[in-house]
Length: 545
Image 1 (cartoon, rainbow, N blue to C red):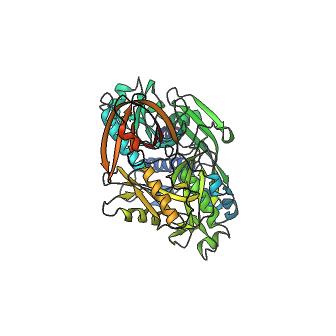
Image 2: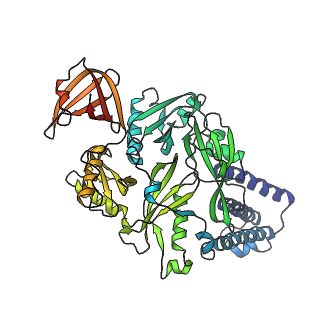
Image 3: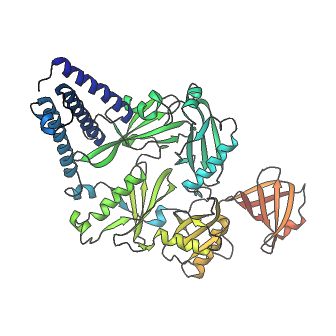
């Protein structure tokens, strides 16, 4: 069947219109390494073939007995479209196979930047004001409750599900922007933009609404050109972006962190991050950084999933692809789950390493830097994370609490799992510490400080560590002098405690009478000096002067 020039022009024009609409919605990178680009082109030829086929049906007047032979016979345009479509699918399939770990096991194994490290020298005992006590689910509950108190915003905006964990001014926090409640609310508020974001301190569990002088104009809840995905796509049409996250710099300015993917093995294999685009969420200004020049305050360049996949390739492909499937000799893999810890002003992904056989113990663990991609391996055998979580839950089974996924701490130079224990409403009620190498050593308490003290006692009683001294060990000891403004006593576990406010501070100080008998003479108006442990909201007083 011959097509007139006008018919061909109409078919091509209609295909271009449909393709432009598809591109505007799907936003594939114009890059032959991008699987989405191949899907886009193949889909266009499928659409073109369908339009030619429909045109043929109407042109030939075929009604009830449409057959492939009738459509294709003499229809060279349709044959060409179908041929190109099949060729593209074959190229994509062959390219995917040639890029896979089946024939590139060594290259995949070498994707990781790994070094073996010493636990006690790398991981110092950090202050409890730097330990994230909340997991993502608990942070979302805290964020939702904070949103409910912001009456000026709650009718127009919702809390986004971002909740990116970052290091902000030396503290672990999660940040998430507000988002428009619906399309109508976007129309009425888009001129001013999104007025605030929520920051949750993962250590103190406090949520704060950060109001901006100028609203966020570029976000995932925007539409048309201000949608962040569309904004960066039109700025960088060839870039293959990975998952983007919102972070804030040290001044609290919100940015979108947009890592750019590169494929180093064949067409579609060996994904890595080559550079990062930072987008000011307020102005939309974009800055492109090479991977080695990313600012120090940026935390999320390599996603946790990408870093974990690197180690899984490294651990399972030691003796080639077939060995990873059949005998699985010397094959290791990461455990199911991960968490974040802060170190050296960066966010590190923590996960255990276990044998492929699926036993309930770890042969070690890895820390993976989300900014640089560096991975550190620690060969410390011990309990698998879920076994430790079960041990902690068993300690409080009468309360029905569930454990968060552990984070890794150094307590008395012992690698230790630290977990929060949550009630049925998802709120943190207690804390647990479990020794990695001997997971029957489990301490639980209602405060982190008390949990640490109990855990250290258990380490000594189980001959894991030597007693440091007869006195309890405190972290972050500070001193303050002030006049007593309020004093209340209470009996806790058979001991009398005085809870005191000073004129020089807004916090509450807890003085145990059995350790500080001189406090019995205290009264409002008296000037005192406290040495206290700055690890909890209520400060534990060590000595009184």
